[in-house]
Each structure stands twice: as C-alpha cells, then as structure tokens.
Amino acid sequence: MAGTILRRIRANPSTHELARKLIMICRRARHSLAHVHPTFYMAGGSRVSSDLVAYEYSYIGPDCLIGPRVELGAYSMIGPRVSIVGSDHVYDKPGVPIIFAGRPALNSTIIERDVWIGCGAILIAGVRIGRGAIVAAGAVVTKDIPPYEIHGGVPARKLSDRFMNDRDRASHDCMLGQPPTRGNYCDDLR
Image 1: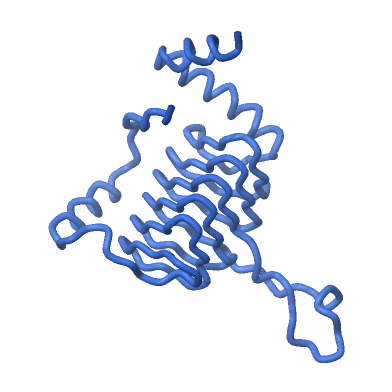
Image 2 (image 1 turned 90 degrees about the horizontal axis):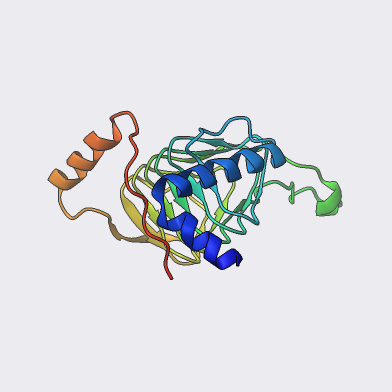
C-alpha cells in the first residue's frame, strides 16, 4: 500500500514537490533549522546542527552528521553518510587528558556553490570547498579544496579538474554568478 502511494506521488511532479515541501517543514521544525532556504532538502536520518546555513536548491543526503558552523552553497549536494566533524579538541596540553583539555574556537566550514560531496566522505571542520568542486566518495578532507577541482583519497588530494578547458569553466562560472534558478532534479535510481 505505502509503495503504491509513493509511486503515485513520484509520478506526479506537482504532488511530489508538495510532498517534499511538507516533509521539509517537519524536518526544519524537528532540527530547529532557521537558516535554510525553502528549496533546501534534507533526506531522513541525518543529524544536523541547528545553525546550518543552506542556500537555494542545496541537498543533504540520508544519514549524514553535520556539525556546527557549516554553510552549504546553492546547488550543492552532500551524499549519504557524509560527516563534517572534528578539529574540536585540544590535544597538546602535557599532563591533561584530551577529554579534559577543552576545545579551541571552531572555524566555519564553507561549502561553496555547486559542490558535490560523495557518499561517506569526511570533512574536518573548518575547511573550505571551492565552488564547483567534487569530493569523491570515501575521501577524508583535511585541507581546503580550490574551485572546480576533483579530490579523493585519504587524505584527499587532487585527482583532476572538473572542466578540461578555461572556456567551459568560465561559462559555468558565469552561470553560478547568476541568481539561483530551479531546474529538473535527477530521477531517483530504482
């Protein structure tokens, strides 16, 4: 019965969009998300700090752990089971166990526009992921990633550029410089 209802909802784009909006009203309230755009969507099972700032058409996948002071740019996608954590314990006080040593000031984690962070990636709090960058599944990001680069591995390192020529990059940069607009979402995999 539930499967039939879900198929009918997904088959009708306007019904599907309304269902997404209603789900997000509930999730915004449950997680006290006061700083997310109405077009932001978060899948179920994620634990997200209430100070999350999320811009137009951004997305957080299922079962993510998003710590405090995170900003998610327009069009950015965070895949399933991504964590943005860490860098939050003092560990270099001789004679004091880490658990009692306190915490340093936490730097903001900035994920710029049109970033894709793959499944299971871990970002250490305080990094900046440049616009249009891609973080491969399972990567551990400990340093900033420049715009339009693809990084992967443990620790993450540059694998390639997203665009192969300056003309394509400039064209994409021009589009990202415009106010965000709605497009067609990818179909669900079945």
